[in-house]
Amino acid sequence: GADYRVAFFGAGGVGKSSIVQRFVNGTFSDNYVPTIEDTYQQVISCNQKNVCTLQITDTTGSHQFPAMQRLSVSKGHAFVLVYSVTSLQSYNELIPIVLMLQEVKGSALSDSPIMLVGNKKDEESRREVEYSKAEKLATKWGIGCIETSAKNNENITELFKKLLAMEKKRQLAL
Ligand code: GDP
Ligand code: MG
Image (cartoon, helix red, strand yellow):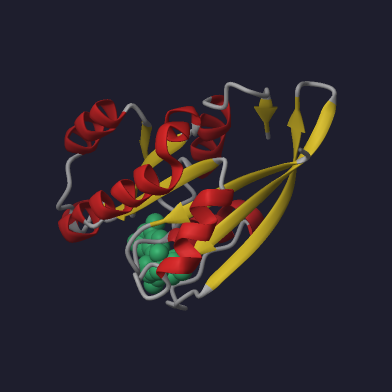
């Protein structure tokens, strides 16, 4: 198909919406606006001479709408799992999300590009999660990992580049 669907997951407040806004609009806001679910579209290149639509779903952080979360998973081609480096709790909250991905996607999950993202890397003095810890978990799960700052625009484009480069069925690029 011409659509490539990426879903963002993670606890409330880790910066999912900020990463997506930074990537899509190049903007950042200090105001916290809880999301229900929003979808954004970007045109990307596919198999060198074609284009396709990158559909980014910014999901709710809470477990309030499990049916909506599961629908985003079943429709999704790739996944971004976000925690904040300032919150060990937000990191631990990704474990049930991964279990849900495994349950909904089954064996197809091994074909899905997944990135583990430690956001708010600019808040070094408040850090609770070391990069080496995330790297170990990402290796165990067989997924990619990166630290970002939506605030300072660090590694946001790189996150999407790495994610798209993991897709084996088509050659995707920004
Ligand atoms: P979401 O609930 O995961 O969508 O989180 P938001 O994107 O709404 O961000 C939650 C709060 O964290 C907001 O006040 C943002 O301004 C702030 N925030 C998001 N990204 C960063 C970042 O990279 N660094 C810092 N310092 N704050 C951030
Ligand atoms: Mg949000």
